Length: 240
Image (tube, rainbow, N blue to C red; front, top):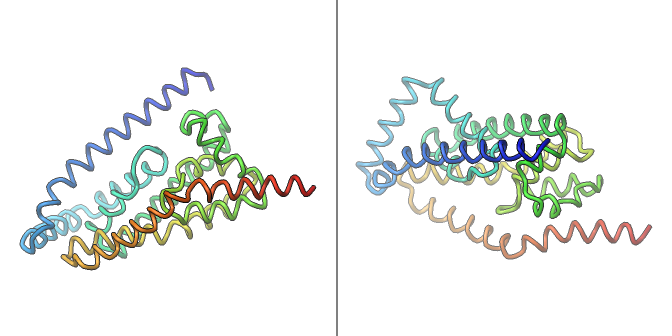
């Protein structure tokens, strides 16, 4: 892949990011003041419920597309989309739709990378991210790393999604491990969104605190966690 093609890929990803961010901003900003009062929440529920009932297929399709793009375009933040899913579809169905959209996105990325190889990865992931996750080439550590890094918040999930297909990991293994690991975070985000829309502020606050604490710990120890996999790989080579 030429430098020109890589620039086109990055520019396209940036355009999609801006478009999705703008769309989410337009959708979410009017919701914020409505969530602060019981009357507003009732009105929001009526509006959202009416839209979903009248255009269920369109609404579900649009949301799946957003979740799909979040996986494919690494720049798009997933948390906001997942919270929005909880607000619109509720904790249960929001989580289900997030899982489906995420899985479709992962399948698309996995097989595109398997087809095009490193050039497409270099067009999406920066060199620092590629170097950081170089330990994935250790076949025995790859599966454990995939599960742990997808499970913990603030880990480089976007880079991992693009780099894992370059390893020897089986597609089915990757999809199962990544989806199992993603599930707790998706559930928390959707339940948080659902709790906000239903006025369960205390539950929302508790969930926020839990996620914030776990996220802070992961931020502080992220490099140590990733370096632990690198150290294990080095120790193995030394032992040989």
